Image (tube, rainbow, N blue to C red):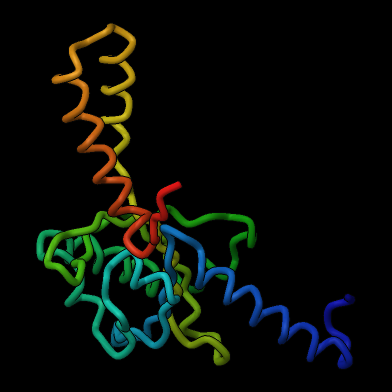
Length: 182
């Protein structure tokens, strides 16, 4: 497909819908589009598997951010909005550094999420800040469990570490999965 020809518009639009669906269904990841007032205009379907909320569209993102992380998040948002012109001059392959914040899960707990923002506020077709989000999983318990097992530590020392790690992984990627015993 050659970009730019009139006959490719339908194919390109269909491809964009497929890409949006793929982003929307990526496990452990979610994406949001927020307007200039920081209200969610769109969210991928995986936001519910990571945060538990069935729908966040219409909510202000500040209400989802841990109070201790709001200032950091606002500084990042301000940086992206005030430097939009500079970002437009960057090579498209340049990745903007993510910021890590805690977002509130529906059950009241906090989920640590790494957010990469891309400023599309000036783009009339998008008109917002696009956030690509990935849940952060602390892997230190996995390393500790492997170390304990390699030293033949007592099972009473290994199992609590493995259980803690399994709980983290479960929160990160298995909230919506159904486990069928074999």
